[in-house]
Length: 152
Image (cartoon, rainbow, N blue to C red; front, side, top):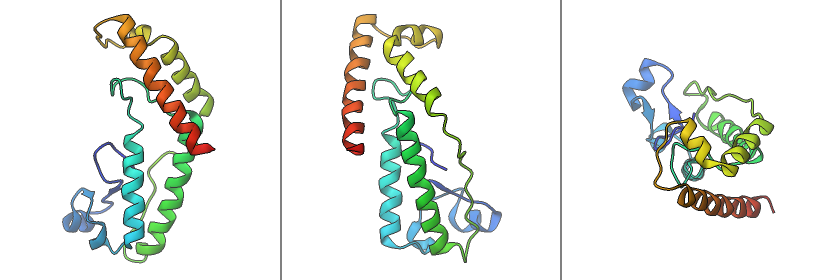
């Protein structure tokens, strides 16, 4: 399960926790191949891009399609990890498989259209409405261009 600033691998039992700790980041010690370790690191960095660059408390600019894409990649990576170390360790998926693309796209759209209303509703302070709207519009445009390149 991915979390910001952490490895996506977490202990399942006390034996693993005693050997690796709560959040497992010693991938080589687990017995994972270098190519799998690089995939994990790449996907961790990619996951970090989900954070809103204007303010991390704002919704991600990732579209529903991007969430589905990421989840598909994670399920594939999970299978690779299971194939490499599943004989030694229990490898479980605790990530939800459900992605509501329409809901995600609606949240992104609503936020981009009126980040000031979102901020006020959620108690997030900002310096000026104009600056906030401009920053959100520019950051969203940059992300949409980046996402379009991924899918082209």
